[in-house]
Amino acid sequence: MSSAQLTQHAPEMMETFTVHNVGLAIDGNAILSDVSLDFPAGEVVALVGHNGSGKSSLLKILARQLEPSSGAVAYGGRDLNTYNGRDFARSVAYLPQDLNTGSDMTIRELVSCGRYPWHGALGRFSAIDRQRVEEAIDATHIGKFADRMVGTLSGGERQRAWIAMLIAQDARCLLLDEPTAALDIAHQIEVLSLVRRLAHEGGRSVVIVLHDINMAARFCDRIHALKGGRVVASGIPGDILVPEKLRAIYGIDMDVIVASSLSHPLAYAR
Image 1 (cartoon, rainbow, N blue to C red):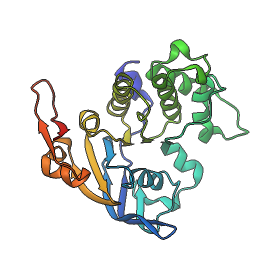
Image 2: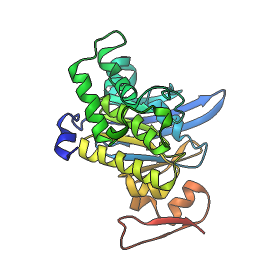
Image 3: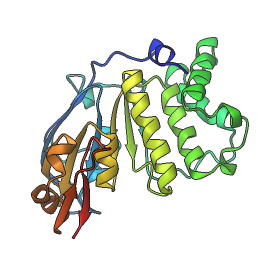
Image 4: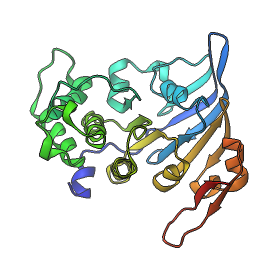
């Protein structure tokens, strides 16, 4: 699909998340503390940090899967609690870590599930719905196996199918929780290249949880780093990939190198 085709039905880049003094406690344990962040519209923003830093919990709050214990979250200038479920789902699409469903569906059937917020369980699947599904399949380059069962796909193919479902949803913002966690490096690059293209060419915003700081620097416009449930660094990749910031994030000494062939530095542990 060309850039013109990809942007033809893409939503305008006007919605964005704002997180203000958010805290989250579960069973008396503080998961997030005093988190304040902006997620600029039209950017791919990474949430990074060590295991247990609160990345996925923050993403779940953005997706309305968790209710913060304190603070406020707004989307498009409106408190999240003011949206009804269907209106929010028409604007924000969430892909969790654990994708244990859909294996017995074809890719086309899975992608069609993205249209649910637009017609409901009993609504008629319209010509517009079918058009959006085919556009999403084309945009993610999975047309050649669109009639295969999801359970027969490779990891990278499966992730592309799930992302296609989010694209069919016509959402302004995609929330992705470690979509490359179980993938080899080739498929990581494939999926993250797709995410970046869909954001920049399609006028969408993306918030993505990643473990690999170098992948975040390569594919994301901005990085928010958490440690122990608090924000310890925030900025463009070049501002984050410096030794003192990396030590603050990961608690170990790290260095960076600059390669002339890359637009971003590379970090490595000493």
